[in-house]
Length: 140
Image 1 (cartoon, rainbow, N blue to C red):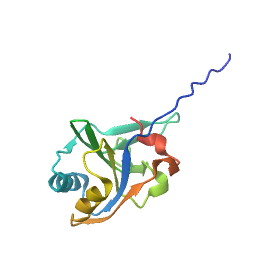
Image 2: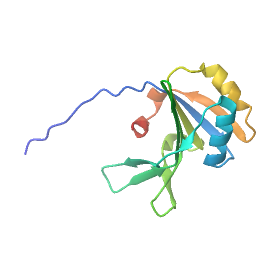
Image 3: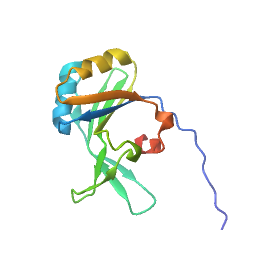
Image 4: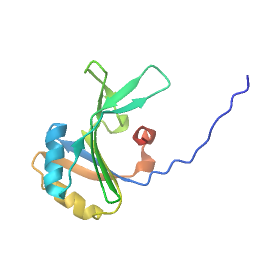
């Protein structure tokens, strides 16, 4: 049987920030809410399904309002039984979280400066999505 392949052009029209923090996901979301005056809320866990048996389950907090979408994703992925399995972005294991932002509510330097004020947030940087090997894991 002839195999047919579907080719698509994926648009990565969002900003991605890598975050290293000693906080748990819910506490970091609370601090981000206070710093940026947003309301990140816990939503259903983000699931990345692969062709193989492997399935990644990642904690997700989300904020949507007036054309702005923010998502706080844990980089540590878990099996359904709760044991750590892998990383959402395996080439950046040193990051604990990723913050995705669509829309232009606040400029990048202003956003990072506000977030750097959070105690327990050790490092934050804007990342180049096109340089990530596993950027497809961020499409949902």
